[in-house]
Length: 143
Image (cartoon, rainbow, N blue to C red; front, side, top):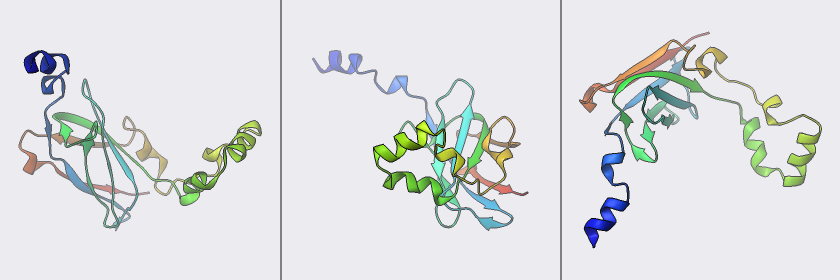
């Protein structure tokens, strides 16, 4: 019976092989905290990470630690705390903002240059190697 259940579950063979991928994000030589890093690898699930106070991140894919093998286009995004204000808004507040066409995007401020928001335009790349010790990246962002 377990063999039948395992066969129906999708099993680990459906998941890509993931390897550790970590790094640091600096903007004008200072660590960037609270930034989201995204790795886009052709024909693979998206890997993401969030920087800590020292600008360090660890990638995850589908809730699992690591990133798929391959050459990744990379984006880094960071918006101001104005985005956090949405958490304290009531549904009525949000509906009112939407009705006025004034959603949160108008209130957010990018804290790093917008060119880093798009993986196709950021100029940032990462090659994920099967040897996880090689997957330590440093992204130095500048104006």
